[in-house]
Image 1 (cartoon, rainbow, N blue to C red):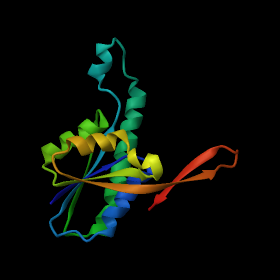
Image 2: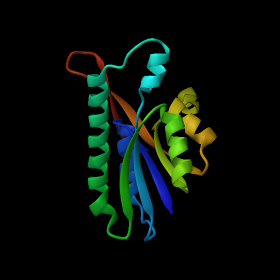
Image 3: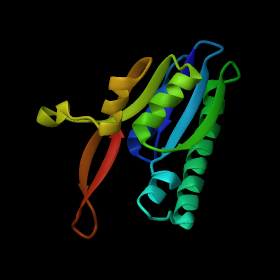
Length: 164
């Protein structure tokens, strides 16, 4: 089985990683840990007569690689030797890149995070998650994380996300 795990630097993604570790996976399961650097390609910017700040792009790419590498290294001992875990960073539109990677890699399942909510907010999931659900070539599992509001020291509202 090929399982694509779509992550970013949110607590929703941390919930997805924890969900992966909480399950018993069949020997031979392959995991692809994917992060999408969601900035337009250089060609897109050039079409508008603009240029890409190469320092910003390099910083985002570096952060994405570190996130993926850290996730792979965290999962490796948790999942054991019967699984294969690889990491990948791509640049582009998040949902389109996740769907394209799932198709090209022949994913059997995509795990993706979303906030847990109640009431009318329950109907709303992230736009990336929604787009992946609508266009993915395989089974999708949305891992929900609970969002609790806490007050920060300076009196402004701060969001802390915890597992459901």
